[in-house]
Length: 355
Image 1 (cartoon, rainbow, N blue to C red):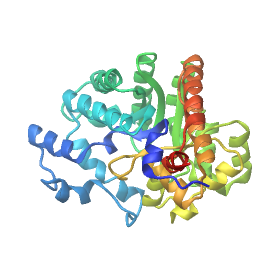
Image 2: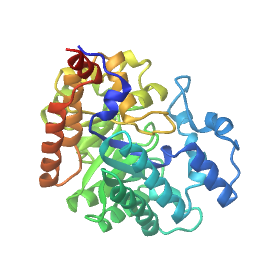
Image 3: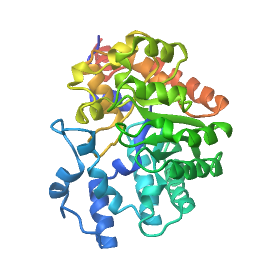
């Protein structure tokens, strides 16, 4: 098995289907926006701010992980800041050859300075559109209801999703702390989205057991599952997810940090792949987790034994799982398949030159 480097993995075409806008800012941008907006931060240099917005493996729980968002959201309350952060996220992704990315966030969390929900969505779409013009990347937006905020707000966000259907919003999600906030409380919002033929995904089976995944699929009609690490605890449900090709949006490094799994070697993505589940690899939060899609694939390769051929297979699963119209997805897949066929790691290329 050829040993892959980070540079090899950066050259591969990829997707990122599970990435939160408010967890994926540049440190310098947070400082810059805070200065412009006169927002007080817990640090005034990248080094002093880092401990408050970037977690390591010593993070205790999902609740502790989510504290970083208090900082990022404090500077994401203006139209211009949303345009900028959306553009920069797509720019950073494009630079490591992410060809298709679905950016998720909850507009309700960006209203502290009076922005309307429509303006918030418009700002993010504008930033992503600017990046698409400049780079070889396609994007979509997933709007998130929040488990701990009232189901009425989720319904309002579902209506917003419907309003922006075919205008850049490709799906609806439910995010936030799982325990004590069951997905079924938000069933009406998902009913509204599904009735309008829009895709949905739910965070489930991250901080709570497989019953959370069961609810996401059977009460809310999820087409994909965010994280799903606890699916391994229910073989019957795992087989159902496999049989129905429901993709899992795996975020390996984030799952270790939030203690959804104890150590990387315990991550079930290896088992999921081996039994045939449709697994995708994602960053979750590029800045908070301090990762990229390429780095996540490097973790799979170095710590979970994924070969180049297996990584190529997972990459294709990412494109297959995209919330895209079939014709567009098929065209993108055909292009990616050709690229993957001709891809050679640098180590093999240099050997060939020596021969």
